[in-house]
Image: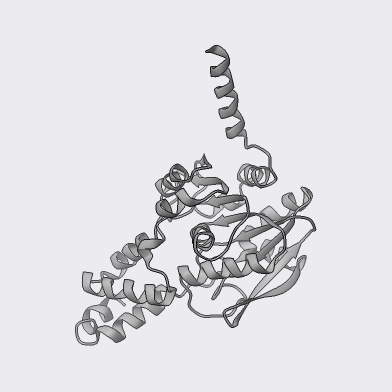
Length: 288
């Protein structure tokens, strides 16, 4: 691709841009592992209509719903470790495969499409009280709530990116694209997403958000830098940040302490860190 962009970019910039955009917007398939396959077999499968296509979804338990949203090149079953703890707290858990992911329709997708699929899921599931979202799922959820649909009162974003421009910059570096082709690529991605990328910066979206947010991010995340999560938590009016170490970008979804913190938060319980902060504030008030 690097060689092709260098050779064909100057003579066929339109075609080169479309090919690059297809590559940029195509998620790498992620096969099911045994745990994910078992989890899906235990769920009630249904479909969600999304812009003329079909999103495959699964439901577990009964009660107020918690929607699980995976990230780029992921799939709904990737968050299956959250299912049993939430069901045990009397929640209905709903997960789905985003467009062009897992079993859902489509071969390419983008942030706008992803965000509209989150809105479609919210519109199809009754009584959603919380969302737990990983990586691009967090960014897509924020965009969905800012532009397309009213959301629940509690959100958990695990390893959320702060702005899609970072993905394009990383792609530019990987393919060694010229600035001109990168600008063309950005415009094409925006056309497909039907959203100007400058309008979906998390720090611009965050101040208008009223939901309570727990951001969980690992210092050793090599895919989405820790500063992204810290920045979002700092800009969001009712947010707290839980920092982990040594879990990276994906293993964090299997960590028992992370799962417990997320479940306690969406179920209405304070996280341990939040409790400690409140106790410290009360102690300082008593001393004064």
